[in-house]
Structures are given as structure tokens and as C-alpha cells.
Length: 246
Image (cartoon, rainbow, N blue to C red; front, side, top):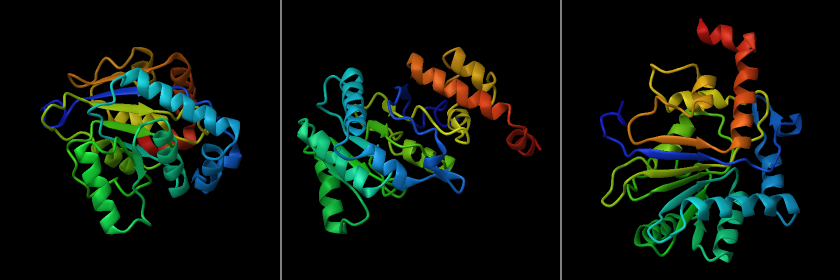
């Protein structure tokens, strides 16, 4: 409703296939993803972590070829992951820092000032920027981990939805593809759509025709396949669907 009333900035949401397969049970524990297992596969010198980073970097430069003026946040799984991403981006010439909970308030203030001034392009964080931070200039958000909590997902997305001078839209890049069967991709997508819409699998198939004006969601072919498979598996799961309908 806020988007339709133009109280929030429209978003352009791009889903890109993640080369890391996190669908196996080793990544799932106690009804959620195991952060430590995700950290192992998302960071380090092994080939898969570097391949994932290369795809993230290539996707960013494809959708944002001119990094001047970018003020972005990347949401990571752990502090180690945030530092890894900040180091890798900086090594590629994209000035970045890890905005994490073990940094003191003075450091955090300096990093935020550097982001606003353009000395930093990205801040990588875990949940520290999910709420209570008001930086309307943020115009790019990277989802670098699967977020189980719908509330946290909306808080993170909301960091970039404030209007600011010269800001036409929020660019959202989502790199979570091959998810566990119990992960609910449909809940995230439903939250971005109005109440009057197609069934969520049809929305994906028809490229989201019911989004608020100015907003768009685009998935690459492989990413769309992952999302549809996840949605349809959950729609067939009566143990999930019946209590929700009731």
C-alpha cells in the first residue's frame, strides 16, 4: 500500500542463480538454516566460494555498470562472511567495509559517514542494519543469504525503500537459489505483492504482473526454476498449508 501511494521508493528486484547448492539436510537444523554451515561454504579459499563471489560481482556490474553514486548494503550470514565480502569487493576496487556487531560505535559512525559521502560503496553486515538505521540514500541491497524470518527480510529490504534526492528506485540483487525443501520462498514473494493477485506460482510464471507501479521482479531462467520448484513443493505440503489456511 505504501508503494502504491508512493510513500516508498519503487524497487527493481533481480534474482540470479546461486552456484552453491544449500538444499541438503546438512545446512538445515532446528527449523532454520545452520549459519556455521553456510559460513563454511560461502567463505574461504575454496573454489565454490570464489565462484559464488565472481557471480555476485558479475551480476552487480551487469545491473549497475556505473558504480558511481551507489550506496549499498549486503546482508550476510555471519560476521566472518561480512568481512570476507568486504575484503573481496575492496580487492576488486569497490571500496567496502564490514559493519558488524563487534565494531564500536565510533567505527560504525565513521563507516556510515563514509558510505553517505561516497568514500565507501558497500557496507556488509549481518543483522546490524536490519532496523533502527535511517539512511535514505541507500539505493542497492544485496541478499547474500537465505532469510528465514519474513520480518527480518522486510526490515532489510526496507533499508533501501526511503525516498532521497536523485534516487529513482532501489536495486535489489538476490543470490539465494537452490534452497532446502522446508525454506519458504513463497512467503517472501507474497510480501512484495498486493492482496489481489494470482496464486504465487502463477505470479512467478507470468513475471509478476500485479506489482505496484514502478516496481519489477526479474528472475533468470535457472533461478525461476528453483523458486517454482520450492513453491510447488510447499503448496503440496498439507502439514504446512492446512494450518496456514485455518
